[in-house]
Length: 266
Image (tube, rainbow, N blue to C red; front, side, top):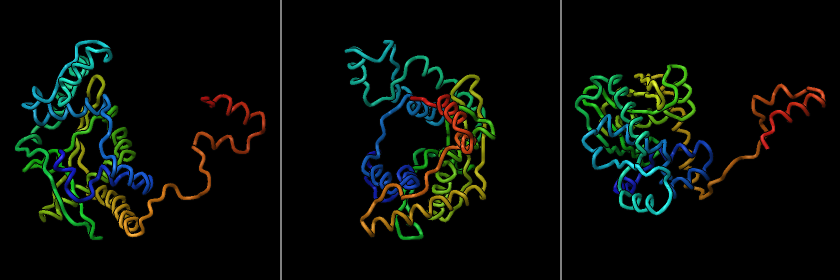
């Protein structure tokens, strides 16, 4: 992975921060390693079990010592620093999730190439790079997403809010720019709670178009900021209230006082 990070080019995991602000992009560029959360570790181990089960023995360690604190935990974490560490119940969750994902994927998992690095030049001259986790010679780009809700509507909401169509478009366009071949993009969505439901979703060309409308302006912003040397944060604007506060507007003083008393988390 270190070799990939050293390659020149803009990857999606950093570019997406430009949607928040150029300052956030610049910070992510300089700090592109994130602390490993339990959810991230669960996702990584589930990926291994689905796509590269032969690597699980070397890449995964199980902590049976209860709470992760004390000298025993510190020694174990140091000894297994090169591995993903899970508690037994989390490991069992990953096993059940991987079974569900494999059942949903079926023949999509045949003839896979894993961790395929792609590099290309964007239309505005910037260099792009990506690492496609799983590439099926027969079925295109395969992506596994763990989630709380894999239903069509629930996962659609997650895909929109988490930028999955932007990522899909970035990879599909990048692979086509590098090879001349346009591949389909399929997501395996699997829930991280019982009964571990899973589903397959194809990202349509219409959705890829929406993703392109997302990432191309971000690339243009990067180029502008590189030229100016200025990486601003938020622009001045009109205060925007959340939807839950809208019905308080226009209410009498007593209603407003009661409303904010009920919604005050402080």
